[in-house]
Each structure stands twice: as C-alpha cells, then as structure tokens.
Length: 181
Image 1: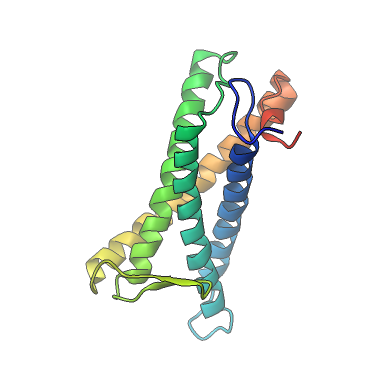
Image 2: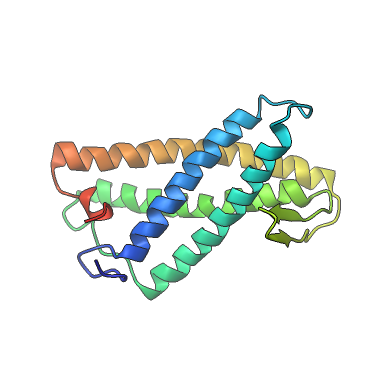
C-alpha cells in the first residue's frame, strides 16, 4: 500500500488520519455524553474530563496534520461517478466535518482555559492558556462546544449512512476505497 494518495486511491496516511480521527471523535462523543451525568464529586469526573481534554487536543493536532497532508498529497476524486447533488453533498459534508474537527477542540480549549489555567495533555505537555479569566467567553465556548458536538453526531451518522448506501445500494466501492486493502 502506498503512503501517498494516487489519483485513484487513498494512501496509507490518509486512511490512518481518517480512521484514527473517526475513532477518537466517536470516543469523545461517547465520553462527553457520559461526563454530563457525573457530578463534581464522582470519582470518574476528573479522570474522564482529563481524558476528554487530552483526546480533544490530539484530535485538533491530527486534524491540522490532516490538512497539511491533504495539501501535500491531494485526495483522489472519488466523486466522478456521482450525481451532482451527491457530489455537492459529499463536498459540503467533508468540509463541515473537517471544520468541526478544528472548531470543537478550540471551543473545548477555550472552555478549559477561560479560567487562566493550561490544558494538560496526558501529563506529557501543558497547552498554555492564551486568555485570562473570562466567564462570558467560557459560557459562549460551552454553548458552541455543545451544539457543534451534536452537529458532528448528525454529520457522522450521515457520513456513515452515505458510505453504506454507496457500498450496498450503489455497489460503487466508495467505502472499500477507505478500507485497508
């Protein structure tokens, strides 16, 4: 398997970015849903919050690297055989998902650092706060984080449904192109 993309196939790096980020996002959504029911005194509250912050920062880093990789190794045009509305939908969905991969961790970072404290990533490194204590910013970031997370759920489900439709209804091997082969 080639590392770089070709005009017809996704390369190893693109597949790695896709699946690692996808699994991390699904895990973060599940962890986020789990966390909202915890109280501050629950023994898992601080652990789950620390994991959520750390994974979120890693998703941000991976999304930025994914963008750089796509500039270096452009993705193949997999939409050539699609109807115009499918091509447009795929383009919009991919751009929105990529934007949310960046915006959600940034909003989470702002939630975490709006009290002036750094974000600890698995004890490896601290990402310093770039803003001083700001309750209004925190409240806005919490709201944006919440709504963007739900938008991501809708888009991820749509993305999965579209991939399954292409594989099992259209039988056009769109899904297979992103699998390991």
